[in-house]
Length: 449
Image (cartoon, rainbow, N blue to C red):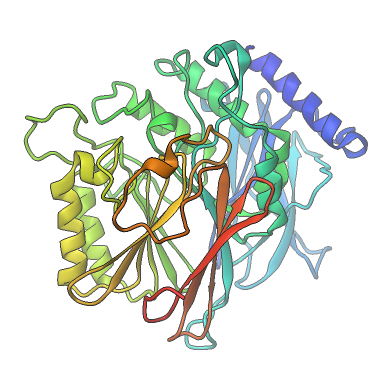
C-alpha cells in the first residue's frame, strides 16, 4: 500500500468511526491535529496533510470564543511527510484554549474536542498544581503487506481510546512508538510511510488532539532491531522523528540525537537518547562502551544534581534498574555506565529519581534503596499495542516490586499531587480496555505506599 492509498484508507477509517462529522473534514487532512509541548507562554500544534497545502491554526481562550488568534502559515511539503507545526504564542498561563486547523484557508471540522491547557504560573503564589501523565511504549500498527507472515503482531488500537478516556494532561511516549519494517529502514520514503501509517489510526486522533505529547525513541522507531550508533541513516531517522513529534528541542547544544528536557508543574523530565550515540551491542572489545554517550551522560549527571524537583523523571528506551541480564537491559550490555549513573545519584544524595522505561513487552516496577537511604525507581510500561512477551513471568529481577509484573498490553497513568513540600506520585497501571491492574504510590519521603 503506497502513501496515496494509505491516505485514502485512513480517511475511510475515520469516516466509519465518525460517520456524521467525517463529512465535514477537509479532504486534505491526513492525521492530527496534535498538541506538542505545552508551556506558559506558548504551545506547539502539529498536523499532517495528504499533499502540499498551506496550514495554520486558529485558537481562542475557551471563555473568550470571539477573541481568535492565529499561528503563522506553514507550507507542507513532500520531503517532510506533509507535516506542519504552528506555535500558539498569544496565550496566557493557566488558561484553557480551543483550536482548529486551517488547510488552504478552510476551517477543518472534527467530531472530537481540539483543546489544550497552558501551564500554570504557580511559583511564589500557590502549591504546584496536580497533573496526570499517561505513558507507555511499543505501539505496533499492523500492515499486512509488510508484516511477517502468520498471526498479526499488533492488536487493534482501542488502547488509545482507553487512554483518551482517562483525560491525561500529558502523554510521554517511551519509544518503539512506530515499528519500522525491513522495507522502511534504508529510505526516507519508507520511514515517512511508516510514521504516516501509524499516526493515521482513527482511534488515535482524539488523544492526539487534546493531550500534550512528548516522545523519545528506541530501536524500532530509530532503525533496525537493536540498532545502535553505527546505523548509517540515523540522521535521516532523526529528521523524520522531528517531523512527527513536537518536543521542545532535539539534542544537546551542537550535538545531534533527540535528547531533551521539560518541566511540568514542579516535576522535571529528562528525555534520553539511547540509540544515536550507542556503542554496538555486540562489540565487546570497543573501548569506553556506552549506551548514551559521554556528553549526554555528563549532562544527565549534572542536571540531576542541579535539580530541585521533588521528582526527577528520566525517560529511557531500555530498562535501567533491573538485574535481569537479558535482551538490551542496561546491566546486560553497559553495566559500567549504569553503575556510574547509580553511583552518582547515591554520591550526590539525589532524591526522587524515577526512570520510565519500555522495550521489554511487559511491565513492572523496580525499586532500589541506595547507601544514602534514598529510593530509586524504574517503571517499565510495555507494550501498548505490540505483542506481549509470553515468558514475562519467567524473567528474574531482584528489584521488582512484588505484584507489579504485567504480561498483557497496558499503559500507565502517573498522578502528581500534594503540597509543594509533600508531593506524591501515584502510579496506576491499566490493561488495554482501561481496567486497573495495580496501583502504587511513591510518597514524599520516597517510600512506597
